[in-house]
Image (cartoon, rainbow, N blue to C red; front, side, top):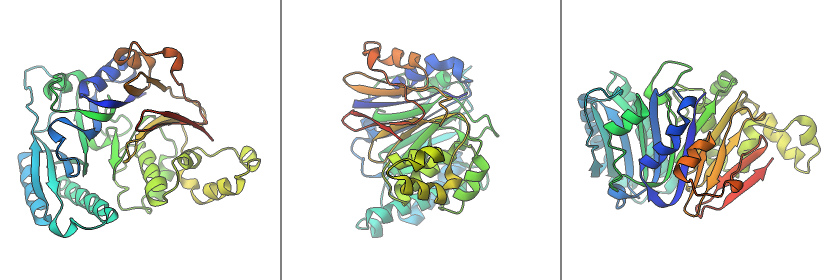
Length: 368
C-alpha cells in the first residue's frame, strides 16, 4: 500500500511541510523513494512564473545533450536553480550525477502563438527530450511546464530530503501547491518515471492502490493521445484519463468520476441524466478503473481534488485550517502539520464523492 498527500496553501510553503505530512505515515510506505510536484512557485522561481521550467535528472552527458537539444529547438535559457546537495556518507539515496531546473523563454516563433500551440510545443519537446536521454541511459525528464517543478528520487525520503537540503526552510524553494508520495514503484521494475506523482500538460496525479483494469486502460489510451506513453505504473492510467476528460474532451471535472467509476446500471437508469451517463459509459468503457485506490490530483488552474474507488477500499482524509488545506492517506499526517485545526471539520470522502479545493481554499463536495 502506498501513502499519498498534498498541500494547498494561501502562502508559499517549503517542501519540508510536505515531508512532515508524509513521514508520520511511514508504516504505510517502504522508504524506497520520494517524489513531489510543486506548482505556483515562489522563491528563486518567483520572477519566471510564465517561463517553462525544465525538471531533469541526468548524467553529465545528458546535460550536454539537453543543452544542444534545447538550443536547436530555439529555447533560450533565462534562469537556473542547481540544488546544493549534501553528499555526507551514509545517506540512503541512489542519486543521479546532475539535476537541472531551468527556465526557458519560448522560441521566437512561438512567443505570439496561442496557448494551445504553446502547450503542444512543451509536450512534444519533453517527449523528444525524454526519448533522446533514454536512448543511452543519460537521464530522465519529468516535466517541462511554466510554474511547475518535479523532483523524483530513489531512496529513503528523509535522506533524500537531507541530500537536497529540503529540511532547510531558507525560502529559496517554496510553492502554494505540493503533491507528493513516499514510495517507489513496486508493481514493476523500480524506475524513476514510475514514481508518483505523474505529470502531463499541467495535470498532476498520484494514487494509493492498484488498478486491475491496467491492461484494458493502457491499450485504449495508447491510441488516444501521443502523450500517453511509458505506462511504468498502473496508476498512470488515472492521469491520462483525467487529461483526456478535462483537456481533450473539455468536460467539467465532475464527469471524471463518472468515467472512472460509473454508477451501477440500475441506479444510472433512474436519474434525469441517465442518457448522458449511458453515452459516457458506452463510449469510454475502456477507461473504467477497478481495484482499491485513492486519487489526488492537481489541475492546471490550481484546483486540487481527491476521490476514491467505487468500494472505498483505500483511506483518505481532507483537513484544513485558516491558511491551508491538506489531503493525506492517514489523519496522522494532518495532525503533524496542522495540529490546531478543528478535527470535527475533517472530511473522509466516500466512494461516490469527489472533493475539490478551489484557489480560495473553499472545499466543494460533489456526489455522483
